[in-house]
Image (cartoon, rainbow, N blue to C red):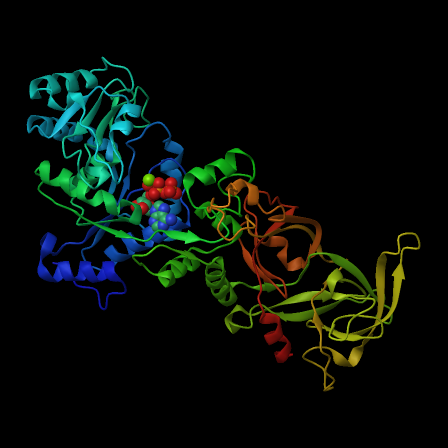
Length: 564
Ligand code: ATP
Ligand code: MG
């Protein structure tokens, strides 16, 4: 007996709670997450996992199976089976040993098909795929019955056995359900249950040349595993009558219940494996783990935490109507998470040299810097301050407008954790006119934390000491597409035509504070005034730091300034 969840958050949880209450399905809750091992998981799958694993976890005896839906060997591979398990664990879910493969049921599924043939509920058809399509009819016209529909049961049984024995070529015959070619639901017009495919399966090898379709394998796999609630996305709503037909006609002991929910769509990206795979294959991104992709591998490499993804999925909820969720919501979730847990650091992305003329040449001060103002337990660290520093190029303007409160000739700013400086001179390249360095003076009485003076300046800049800073490559990621809905083909543009040429900007001459020398791959930081960054886990080498920008900061600097 399971315990009902406290207060259902969505219509699916309400249904499940009611079923448990009423004793339907023996008051059990068994869900499944059924990925097809033909690509890597994306954040849409995360939504499905949060629902399936999450829901099962809300009941004391609830279970969520991991089932590989491996009935189509053409695009499936072992590589994906392993990677999918890794991603599920990373997201924080566990199938508790309940690992299944639809292919493990091939014999049983075959026997169910024989059972249907014997009941005269399935027949072997020699029509080609094109002919079957042409005979299917439309929403306004009924389909046309195949001439093979009246084949005798014995002939069907013999042909089906010969299909299994490998006597025929791909496409020569299929097994179809005998339902109703006049049904208003096209899925019920004698759908195909089995196809001949002479391909090697990643698990069953050459054992089979006959493979069941999704519509046949899925309900029966659910039933065989004792799934109580089979949650799927809205495209399968029209397949539900077929799902129920298969279970009823096969006389199964466990009749699972299919419930549909809206799939996750995110703006400025694509979510289908087919499109993601095309982006990878065409080299528009560096791989399935490219930080610009909404794959779990990409998001992880970008610096997303699994907790932030789960929070996001929880917040968007489970609805019955399709919608497009804003990427900003996902970014909000990661900012919130990293704000609390990412240590702060100073990094200068595009360095400009600043020389403090009145600072002693060889002096180095170790200044105290707070690791995370949100969490005093994270302590503090020391950062070296010296005569020659780098600041951000964009923090200096030779001719500032009135509201530019950063560094400019004659203007004063505070250096974070350090002193107030004033710009006294600008040195330019005589030929190009480019600024080479900026000279300043500092006021020794204004050191942060020690200053008695009440002098306030409007701008506070981050900086690093040139002699101590580490070189780093910093990758600034932006959305992969310029259009909010790249899937929309109504204006004739293909999604590949609206790729954002600026989706990756690589800065190879950045500098970060020396405390980052020991940052481990995957470590996450808030670079003050810039955003959240993580150490790239693929390209970082012991003496070559590479950071990926997870997400820019929104507006938190304004808050920090008030506390100085
Ligand atoms: P894709 O369209 O990306 O190829 P799929 O549905 O073919 O996805 P599967 O591996 O079959 O991929 O999906 C496994 C599970 O994840 C299914 O139950 C499916 O409904 C669910 N799922 C896939 N994409 C989404 C999404 N965008 N939102 C919610 N659930 C999804
Ligand atoms: Mg699928």
